[in-house]
Image 1: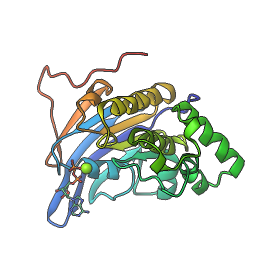
Image 2: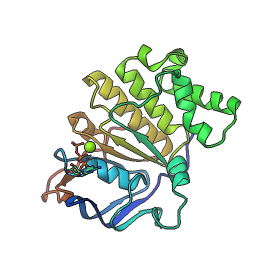
Image 3: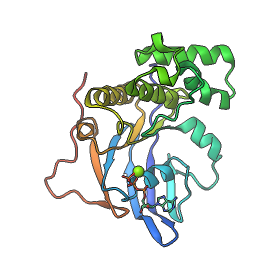
Image 4: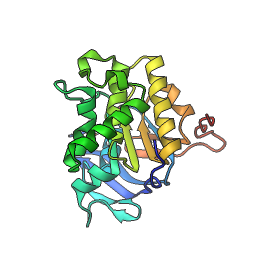
Length: 237
Ligand SMILES: Nc1ncnc2c1ncn2[C@@H]1O[C@H](COP(=O)(O)OP(=O)(O)OP(=O)(O)O)[C@@H](O)[C@H]1O
Ligand SMILES: [Mg+2]
């Protein structure tokens, strides 16, 4: 992967999000610096997916501001463009289109961005090659393993060269070996492109890849106890 621009700087200022009388995220302050790899954990229902959706511009905060590179996402920005050009999403389930080949799935975001067919083919095949799936380019999702599908989903999230990658339980449906391969891919992306990464995961493996771990409880960040290691940087490879 060619070195991209610097990753996005992400800041939340007293952000709250409510669903009726349920408060999913409560007056949350957070700063994730450009190129940081942050892991978010916490019990089910603690607001992790909501947090990612707020950062990725999929949901609007009720209070507070989400700032990307110092600019509020929900005021003044062109949101569809923000999502398309700045942010890549990977979910627990791959959400690939079953009728399309791996290559065509990776190309979908490029169609939205108005990139021509030849260039789309060039970029998707290069990415599939980087994730060691070039021989599977013409296979449909049902012809791929779970881990391979998730790697294709990561390629699709990366094809627009986003400066921020958000992943919500991407290894939730994978075994240990496939999970490790996916986390290696994330670490590789961060190293090569300096992409800012925010990963929601319960997977104990994830800790060793992240710079630090945030724990969400009831929509707020739990402060790490003094002396508690907040995650260990992955060794240089
Ligand atoms: N669309 C919605 N409508 C109403 N309530 C919602 C909605 N989405 C989430 N919630 C509620 O907001 C809270 C936070 O949900 P969220 O999905 O962010 O949790 P989570 O930490 O991602 O949980 P999990 O680990 O189970 O994925 C929960 O109480 C949930 O029930
Ligand atoms: Mg969730």
